[in-house]
Image 1 (tube, rainbow, N blue to C red):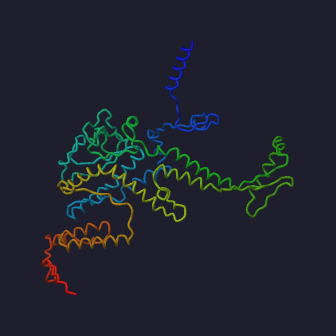
Image 2: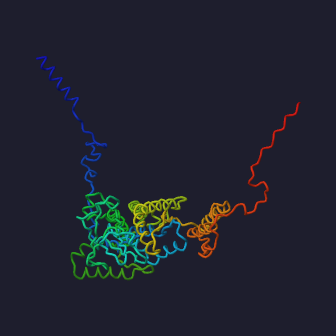
Image 3: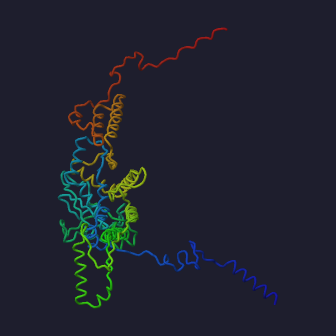
Amino acid sequence: MTRKRGNTVARAAKAQSTKRWAAGDSFQNFEARVGYGTNNQTSGSGYGFDFISRNRVQIEAMYRSSWVVGAVVDCVADDMTRAGIEIESDLPPDQMDQIHAAFERMAIWDRINDTIKWSRLYGGAVGVMMIDGQNMATPLRLETVGKDQFKGILVLDRWLIQPTLNDLVTAFGPDLGQPKFYDIVADSMALARQRIHYSRVIRLDGVELPYWQKISENLWGQSVIERLFDRLIAFDSTTAGAAQLVYKAHLRTLAIDDLRGVIAAGGPALEALLKNVEMIRRFQTNEGITLIDAKDKFESHQYAFSGLDNVLLQFGQQLSGATGIPLVRLFGQSPAGLNSTGESDVRNYYDNIKQQQERKLRLPLTRLLEVIVRSELGTEPPKGFQFGFNPLWQLSDTDKADIAQKTTQTVTGAYDDGLISQQTALKELRQSSHITGVWSNITDEMINEADDELPDLSEMGNDDPNAGQETQPEPKQPAANA
């Protein structure tokens, strides 16, 4: 009996040592109903889907009627295309100006702006590169783009095109898994019922989605409005509620003796009461009087709005955080606080815009620039052809003058040291005029007439007869005896 009891205790000890205990990831008190999962109101909260990206009519109504939605969609698109690009290449200045003129003539930045806007609003959009004389359904081969063939960009949102969901790009690269073709619907303003190859479009998505959610959106992203929909409702509800309180800021009450009896009796008594109230309302002005019965009582109540501005500001800050746009840019509101200028917020926002430019526009603009160069110049881009996005932070006149002075000193110093020719120096000074506004009057004739040879330092004049000769150290004198 003792041996059996010992075996039972051993088995129980072994089971106790191998038993698994479940531990929560947060603090919980079931007696006090504190913590998530303890039958309280917080435990009843959760997240669900709000597929407003699929409701085109509602999104368009929000964009047309809500200035906040319009600002959220437009601000980022405007800032991503406001400053343009700076081309870095060995092309002559006249050809560089020709490329910039093509951007202005065909309103390229306006079309890219529209592509970004509709991609943010609807979740996706494309800009079709219109190349005259080519079949849009065939892959784009850059070497086939001839002089003056590029005619601009046609912007189509996701509701004007139908991607081929069963025919995707299989070639390795950044477009892997994307639709290979886009079929334009019959209601499009141009190119109706045509098929466009993916290499001929500039595709931009709104908010990138994971794989399965992207499939549910026909391989598009989601609208930027979808994430902030609940915050937008809260902000507009609070704003409208605050506006409604204005009508109740001055309330008046009239206490009438035996009001219930008058209403119950009806007839002439009730009509007389209503006529009395109407007379009071008509003649009660700032300079009028209130005529009531001696037993009646008239009172005026005023509503206090203290603290309401802080509530509105908090909801506005939530919208600002949801959109990534600072208050000073989204609402045009100066930041509050001691010595607060909002400069750091704007700089952080511009850094975010710079990141989006590099991430979303670098590859499409690279392909677009190759097409524009071949169409405008008739040749392929030279080796080392690249570009950079101009900074959004605008320089003051003092900063521009300082940069112009330092740039001029650097260029002239390099020329004096024989590192660059006079023609190269003039090109560098003219190229810096896009930033500083100085040296913009250097013409192509002046550059062509300048000397393209490196300066001969021996002919530049030197008054030192020992120039170019190695200086010999003086011999040491023997020390004198003490």
